[in-house]
Length: 87
Image 1 (cartoon, helix red, strand yellow):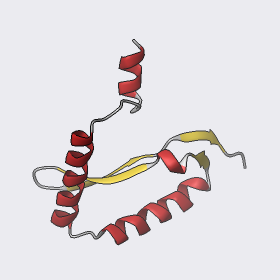
Image 2 (cartoon, helix red, strand yellow):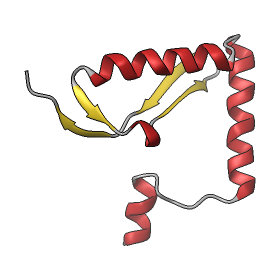
Image 3 (tube, one colour):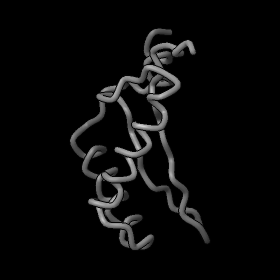
Image 4 (tube, helix red, strand yellow):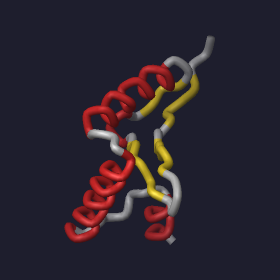
C-alpha cells in the first residue's frame, strides 16, 4: 500500500537508467520545440513568481517540462502547494 502511494505522489526511487532516459526525453522534446534550456529556466522562474503571489509552493520539488505528443508540445508543471495565501 505504501509503495503504491509513493508511486502516485512521485516519491518512487528511480534507477539511473530511468533518470537518464527521462533526461534524454526532455532534451529531445526541447529540440523539437526549439526551446533552449535557458528559456525553459526563465519560464520556470516567471511561473514561480506568479504562482507564489497566491500560494506557498515547494520550489525544490517543483518540476516543469515539455511533453511531446504526436502533433504538439505541452508545458507540464508539477508544483507542490504547501498552503494558500490569504488576502
